[in-house]
Amino acid sequence: MLSDLERLIAIEEIKKLKGQRIRAMDEKRWDEYESLHTPDHVSETYGGGEPAVGAKENVERLKKVLAHITSVHHAHQPEITITSPDTAEGIWAMEDMLFWKQGDEDHWLHGFGHYHEKYRKTPEGWRFCYRRLTRLHVRTSEGAVLGELNTGDEPKSA
Image 1: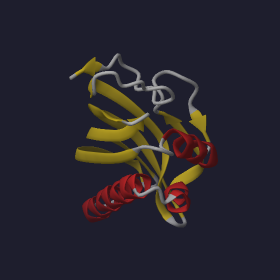
Image 2: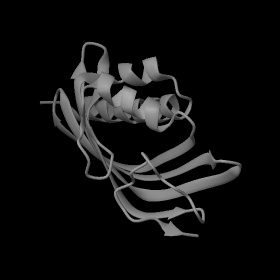
Image 3: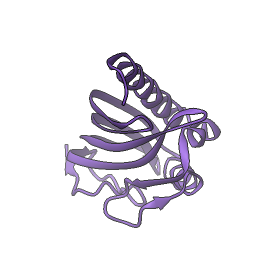
């Protein structure tokens, strides 16, 4: 059983982990990004497709999807529950903006939703072991082709 102080410290460590993950992804620092996940991490981000199982597979998929995309992710309003001394769950409100070129045209996606996550404490600290992205609303630029960028919802053009 964790004391109140230990629980608060764990929550703050998980918040820091979340910030590190988002920055590593947006800055495409893939080695750091992978290190923030357990080797058996499962990610269900790709609109109902097959989940990425394993931190390495998740990174390889993201590298491919985001290769020619500039991304900006925001996560806020965390609801973190410590479920044991070494496990936790969280839900974060999210907003993302993605920018890319189609031929000579600039395009964008603006999404809103939630991250549903699980965390495990390892000898290196807290790490992500599960993540699912749900979207409440998505807008895209007129004529945007999402291709491999499967959002899970039908985009609404601006």
